[in-house]
Amino acid sequence: MSIPDLAPIRESLDARIEELEDEQKRQEERHEGDGSNPAVWDKVEPKIRRDVVEDCQEDLDGVDEQDEVLRILAEWRRNENREWEFNRNSSKVENERNNIKTAEIRIWKEELIELIPESEFKTCGLCESLQMPKSDRRRSRGYVWECPDCF
Image (cartoon, rainbow, N blue to C red; front, side):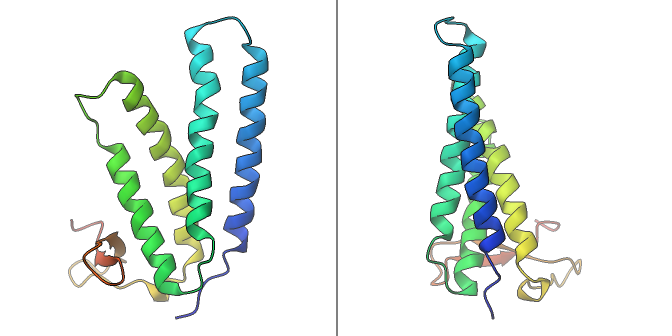
């Protein structure tokens, strides 16, 4: 198992962080002092997205084994699904934050999947599609294989 070249995704993460920092500065300058509700989301959304991207970047730092890359993919899938769940007891603000986080995690999860060679994924015995790693902290690797089409 050889580790895929993570340089392209790291460069993309760096570029995205810079883009979001610039967007946040532009929004803060544009809405400075007007106190409108849309201005709050315009200013906050880039920060929420940037925090997610920085977490993804931190996860990839120091990765030197294929199993670590698959564990990270499993964690990102878990985070995407956890953030996606609508919690009716949460406020509208919290649900909106979760929607923003989910959208950003999904982008980076898909990019990471593209970098991993297909030979590293297992094939489902039922439907013959590729299985994805699913976060399972009880396992020493930190993930198990799951077919997204069957389950």
